[in-house]
Length: 143
Ligand SMILES: [Zn+2]
Image (tube, rainbow, N blue to C red; front, side, top):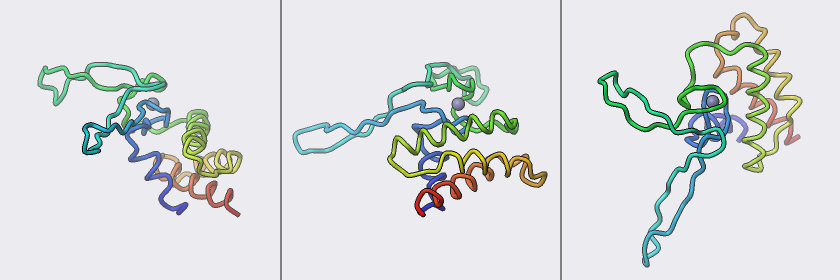
């Protein structure tokens, strides 16, 4: 289970900004009709703000959800995070897992993030760092 936690609840989760891991949307499942068919909708929440993005550079601006916390579009920025940012991101990861009632060792997560961030071969690989740190911290909380 720990191996997939980061990918499932943070990286590919549309509710979470994959740049800084702030919550930007909340998913609601609603019953649509008398036969019990449901529909899932995403509402902007917390750090999510309405913005407009020039889609495909074609001059057409469409509403998009931006992340207020990092100013991003909810997708990972190609620039790597600083050490201070990385520690802040780790705190957000803990908050997102807490919301899902997934046990995580917050101190282990922050420590692992710092240690991994200081390795020259990993320094530029943010996703790899957060994924590994999350795995370590979730495993730690289970033992
Ligand atoms: Zn963000």
